[in-house]
Image (cartoon, rainbow, N blue to C red):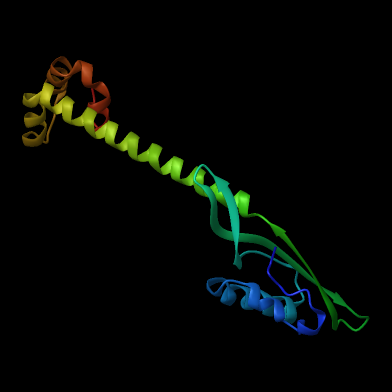
Length: 166
């Protein structure tokens, strides 16, 4: 999963750093220092250099391999660190699902924005006298509010968005 060598002679302290993607190394080092100094458990999501190969309609597609990294220090009787226990879990599929969900939400928000813009444009086109009077007459009394209501009664949502009271 990580691409870390299985040859024990190549294992040196912190040799697993070579598996972490460059853009996440600073974050990892910051959290590692927190573990070493304050002896707190650390949890973070990291990208690895070794790609995740996912299947799609186009065949095998390389993507970022994400892992959830959890580490905690084992302490002796004097509070000194003797070992660090670390665990990684592949969360690449979860990160892909989050990305797809984000894209879907952004597309839905854009479609809603375009729909509201279209409704606003058509509402203006149906009632240009009302829109013109709205722009020129900043002070509205009860009589003009009733007039607006009569002229654009079907466009109540548009009127509400412009804070017109009936």
